[in-house]
Image (cartoon, helix red, strand yellow):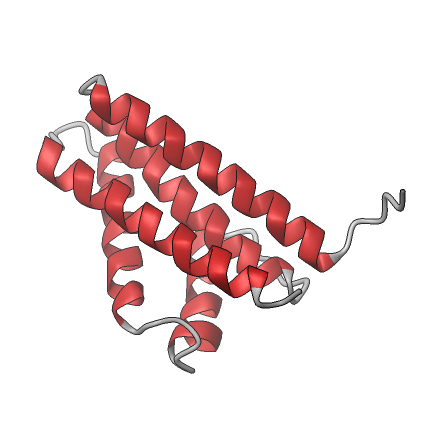
Length: 133
């Protein structure tokens, strides 16, 4: 068996990591650990986006650059629906608040939105990657 890492296999690997983060977010949510669930849901989104970029062999060190590239090359061009950009932006803000704002108190409703967004992004990315076979 050939062990060469291809852009497609690397994209699939990143997508699997995104799915693991989503599962973790769901478990944390069920245990009322909303701060941690927000973090894992965001990282599920982020890893899914990076899975798309892996197909091009593109990556960046900063989160805002990854998201900016994705929005410019995939959302603005309508490869992915425009509404997803707003949801990703909101997820990023909630994650930053959850991680860095000591006074931020997340609730179940906002956290559920994060998890739903992560699930939606993963589903869209999975369809996109599978069409690249």
